[in-house]
Length: 76
Image 1 (cartoon, one colour):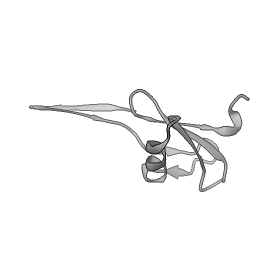
Image 2: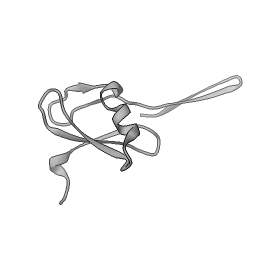
Image 3: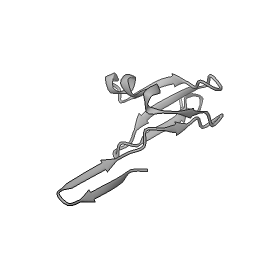
Image 4: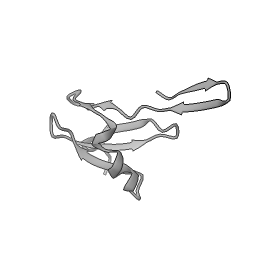
């Protein structure tokens, strides 16, 4: 969930970069995927979950929050 902090003379936008695996609820932080996602020309990446070894799709929405899905749920 994105949020903003306003103060005297500044505005700071913050976004979430942490998520839990949708299958096993294993916690993942931004350190696990950020560099690879920044280098991606497609705007999304795939990464294996550390807990259940399921392939996850990772992207971000227009607010900068992380979006995660199971690759096996994608339509072909």
